Length: 122
Image 1 (tube, one colour):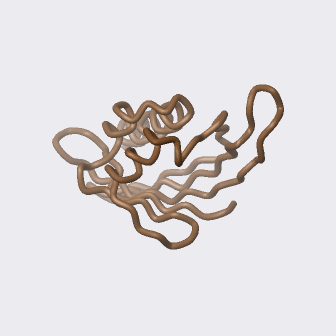
Image 2 (cartoon, rainbow, N blue to C red):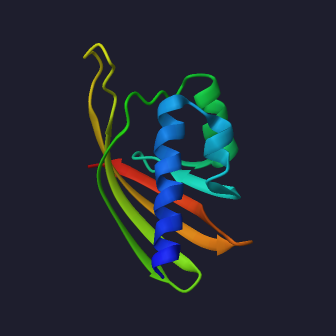
């Protein structure tokens, strides 16, 4: 189970770096093709729509900072909960957004992939 936890945390770290760098290709690799993102407003968005929004700069993440992460694994399924802060810019401008993320993972084709990511204000 330790190996699974390590793989899930690696996926999470890849997500945070990819969000910070607006690397939609790297981000896509972390999710199943039919993954859903649930925004703090309750809006459900398909993965490809979210990635397209990032390409259009509708979703811009500045300096994603991890504050806490935990993983619970049950067989081929897992839940990751993580707290991040984003919105800071290197020049000190911007607005900090403390976010709480709950992600559902599945072990599929030898890899742990996120199937759902729910975000709320942390």
